[in-house]
Length: 98
Image 1 (cartoon, rainbow, N blue to C red):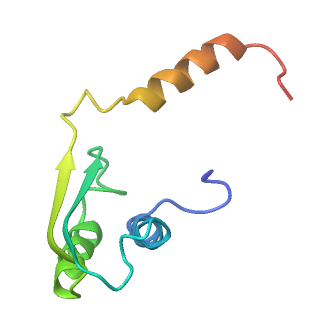
Image 2 (cartoon, rainbow, N blue to C red; image 1 turned 120 degrees about the horizontal axis):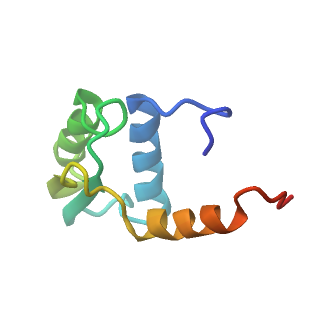
């Protein structure tokens, strides 16, 4: 979502993580063995107490036996989606696409 329509603070990120788990059927009344989150090193969104506490809560609430929170190496946080977006951005730079 765009930052003009909503913030991207830690509590917003935790809400999105929770609702994605619900939508994907991971939080459905049955305990899963392991949940893995992969995040960049943004301290305001991913690398903070809210997200870490959320991971702990998933275990304490009985949703998972284990939660792993992985952070990408600093400077190497571009994923395939970012690469493709950058290709699109270069191809449309200076053109009105709307």
